[in-house]
Image (cartoon, rainbow, N blue to C red; front, side, top):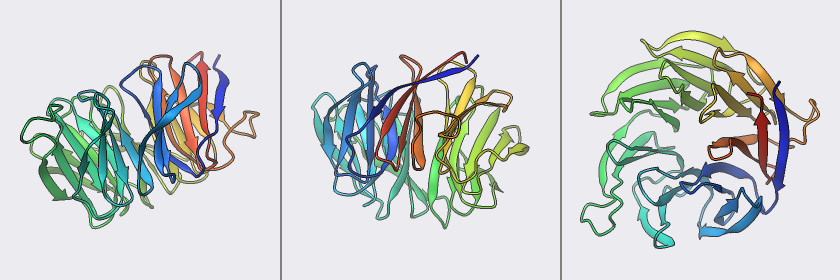
Length: 310
């Protein structure tokens, strides 16, 4: 039987929180949004640690790559700041995009950082962690994916393909070997707002402003199943790090847990009696050390959930 316990509801942000990222260091998470800084939290103490770094504009994307001791923060200005944990400061600001950054991912096998923007392009950066190297954090490529915003990215588990979810309702699949377009298809009736490959690489799950969850068979990217999952836009999809389940969150103020056969197994909402967010749940992430689910919202709160019986 699945049981849900809220371990903490953490105040501190003064404005809506748009994103949460799990640190490379166990028990640490980072959050950011429409505030003037990126915040570091302790899951052990369920407490604020510090403002890790200042930012000049809203942050929509955070990414802590497993292959480099940095946290990347993508701002509304188009800048991406790299905070170096060893030096405890921002050591590099990637200046290329002129419009907001909406997602950041890394390719471990190639030591590359990918940045997607409202301008419809994706930039690819060298993620060499040796700051003394000549080409460290240099721009390698930039290519046009869409005439509209590239809202979200997901990298396949074998790191052979990357999926881009776009504001024009389409998903585009590219090769990670040479960044050539492989597939381009209309995925939803409204903009794609969330995207995630399954851990086995068999399926790509997409969520949209149309509130539908679409399951795509990666053998040809044919539609496997459509689920009327939420009432409003689905903003985040996150697979559990070691259980065969995933979670979704949405503008309808709910979090839902699904099994690998895409069956709904739990709904977290005020109506179900949980001390849930009172506004849109913008991002969720699983913390692998304890298996906690972290959620952030327009209500300015960070919530920590212990979900057992999965």
